[in-house]
Image (tube, rainbow, N blue to C red; front, side, top):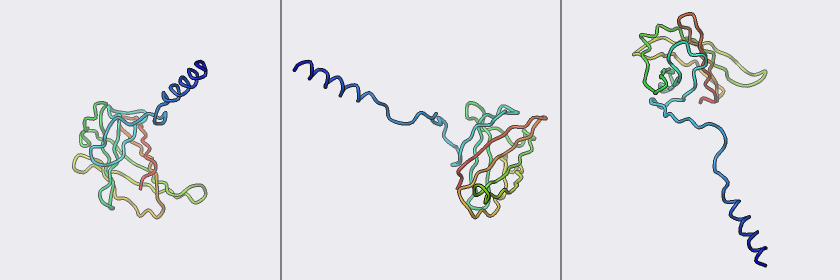
Length: 140
């Protein structure tokens, strides 16, 4: 009887060790302008993180940060930033090209009319002969 009680007690205590949450890596940074953060792939500068934020319903702003989440100057970067917005899936997917310009020390673009949401945007940053890519998914 004591052995049975010991086995039951050990079984209950071992099941309490389970952890909460998934196995994906959590984002340890917080967006500074209320946007969505993404990793810069193959960075052509010291920018490692990008933030895409909305300007009401008219446009999008793009900010770049270094590894310490310090805001980087868009004016001094002299980069060319373009993007492709994709809406829908499969055969119904539509793609629209956008071009970002520098204004107020950030990159900005006018958002075209998007009928299907959520949408995604793939951004290319060309600077010093190198191309960096940033993907933002499930935007609304």
